[in-house]
Length: 243
Image (tube, rainbow, N blue to C red):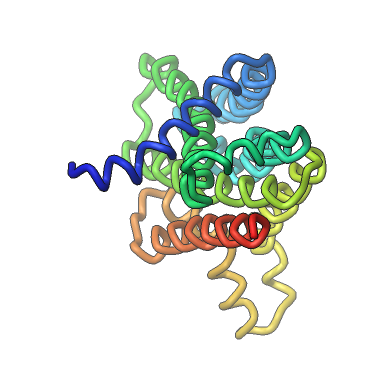
């Protein structure tokens, strides 16, 4: 890696490490993760004990709704707290671009969400003596979850960047995420051309496809595009705000 690439990447990594250290040194990290594991655990073990199936399908089927709540909780403070305290001004007096700052905060949100989701893999170990889940849906479910976390993290960082109030940031991100998740539930009432468009922008539709073990590049492109859109929007908003 050349020196230019190192100079570009280093500020973002420093910001990411600072955000992760701040997050995991507070009780909120463990409260959010604990609540997430309780909810996903109930979804998983309900399938296992009541339906007698060694499967993560029930957990993955509701993952977009669950993450619509928990990822905004992870991201709501990333910009809002700094804007409220005024420390954002100090950040931008350093040799850091808006892209560096957004990249660092986005990576911190993505790592935090991955750490929150990772313990759910232990559920698999617990049921191995009773049956082996189908590997395709398990791999697809976790792959889809990673892409979903990335998209929702970008939305959360954007929501946090437009307000000083963490509660407003949370509800802004939650509303965007839950609309993208639930919009497919209303397709039956709409005309054909609109259904086709809304099906494409539905995060739940794309996630469901991947979680079945069907890896379609159109689904991956959707999540990459959604992540890039809100990431770019955050950078543009911060550049305009800094002028």
